[in-house]
Amino acid sequence: MQSRSPQLHRHQQTLWQDLTLAASPKVGQLDNIKTHLDLVLLALEALLGIGSDAMLKTAQELGLESDIGDRVGLWRLRQSNPLRKSSGGRKKLDVEEARSLVLIICRLAQQHQELVRRAVTLLEQMVQDERPPYQAALLGDYLDNFSNAYQERMRENAAVSSEELENLACKFLIDLLFYSGANGHRRLWLALIS
Image (cartoon, rainbow, N blue to C red; front, top):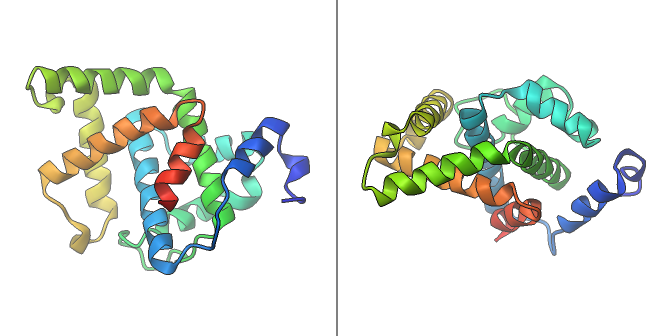
């Protein structure tokens, strides 16, 4: 933690210290963490229309570029998700990298909180009206983007039905609203380690 101190502002240092572990995660838990982080990033991409450049810019703003690296480094971190089709990605994600991804996700969600909130409010309205979410333009685009990216990137044995995929996308959309709040980083961290 000492080597990181000069790079992070005091607030960011506090956020970093919030993300602690009582013990090192076991292999199965690490796989779940990798998968969860990658799918949350996928939801952000699908909703915001962003890519690795926005994630790398956010890493730089947070002083986390040494953990994330460049576009290839970020790609390799995301390829560590065991559901991914890849064979060339690094199959390791350490705790420092997981913390960095948590802070990046939450910063992006905060920066786009208005859009996230609008999408979740729209989702609630559609459910209340007993209408399919994809009938609303914003949600339809999000669901299409999420489904297409999931099917393109994940292995065939990770395939799920279109209904399950829609439910998964909606779950992560709602999660993004929680992650966009003041203690979003803690909420996401607890979701990862519980």
